[in-house]
Length: 117
Image 1: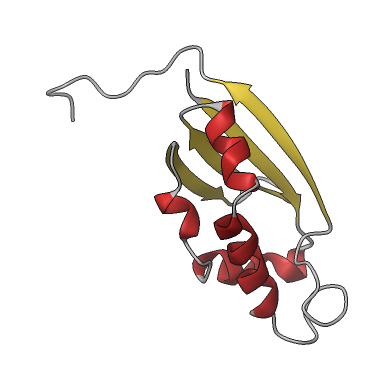
Image 2 (image 1 turned 90 degrees about the vertical axis):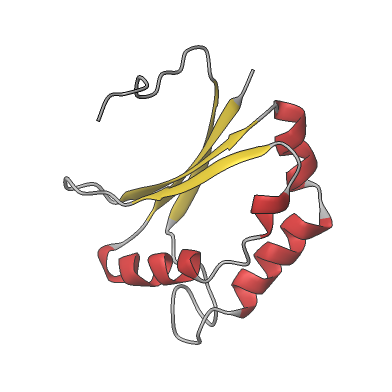
């Protein structure tokens, strides 16, 4: 059964472009992680200040293995290194003012029916 991890990032309006720039330039190491099934960065559009970082994994164990891996540490270290001075809280500080992790198991899923446009 797949699991979904949603990192909820509270982002002040002046940091929206910055957080999107950082994700666009991310290391991309997660794509080769065993059990990784997908990633999406969701931008708020209706008065919200929270971005959602959606990842889908084959299992909880695969996600845990990823977060404990050298690639995870390397990807996050590269992201921190790439932050320009003067952005966020101090030099290379976070673009998000807060974060929390939501976890879900996929119990039902649907996609387009074959032949539907």
